[in-house]
Length: 498
Image (cartoon, rainbow, N blue to C red; front, top):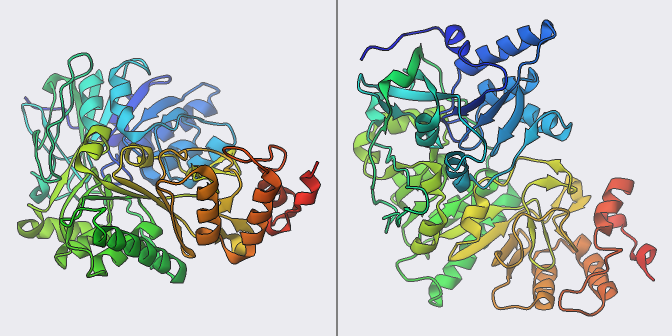
């Protein structure tokens, strides 16, 4: 079958006010970059006429500036799920301009199929190749592309020549059946392949192909500093110690790592710690640091949903498929983040926190409990089901005015029952096998910054007795001090005494 080749502007006219739109990508990798800016132009034109124009947007995770950014600034989105990192989107959400639903990434595709969000009108899929019989070969991410391509009434393909056809074969596209006929997902080691290297769609649904040559809107990360480097060393030391005492099998276990500067520092430390054998990853995002460790032989294999790497690194992968082709696989997000597989493989989950409280509850998403930062992402998918779940963060922020260790988190994303270990640059709090009060002693002593240790000890004394001691009047006192005085160190527990 031959497809109509359209300009991005022509393709965008298939998107109408009130529609549900699904897009490819997972992080800026693999997300659409040509059609979505044209949708934004339509929104601006309609708004100028006094007409409504807003869509609901569904993706695998975050997208890039050409999607989340421009659609946020032009007020073209009414609803968004499940995750984003864009600054303009964040402002719009916290101003109440976009209805944002922060969903576990492993659940996004299946909840669309279950019908929780209604019908899907249009899918916009970035591809490196498209065949006449409806085979779509994805680019640098899996995301929810198989599901949105299946569900959408119409499909627009952005055929992006920036992504080399050398990459064909990196993807393993598999979509589980829905209950009550779902079967086990037969992945028993990170390198197992269970699907096809393409998405198969009905060619008649493809209403337009847009030819582009646009690089991924890759995010760079700063080099590790003294604090993140120490966090990395602490994580490596913890895992090496568990390996030595037999808690972790001597063959080691697959690792999952979140995204960002701390994650890069942690992976660098693990890669350079000779007490830790070469290891595999079963994760949602692979960054430059993983590729570097693959070249050094320290990472043997990486299963991921996204190659969220710099464009230079991506080009290196494409040019050296003879080396990387049998060391990488990209999966849809409901497979890369699937709780069944996480528990089966015994994955060690390593994620970052905004704050943790003295009992081990973790806030990954909200600043002072109300303002969204990015979203939950896939951290919950891995944390609840991990062999060991680790959260790390610097002990203080904003020049010491904010403590990451608080009496009670201002928002809970991962509760104390799912969190095994908390690590800061100050030290390691192993919470396994400990009661709430024992966890409080461990976290205060091992993880809190020296400026805050006594403040936290004084809170615990004020809290009194109980299975999980708290003063309900004072539990958020450090946050109140931050909001009113600009510094958690100025917290005065006498203000809350009976």
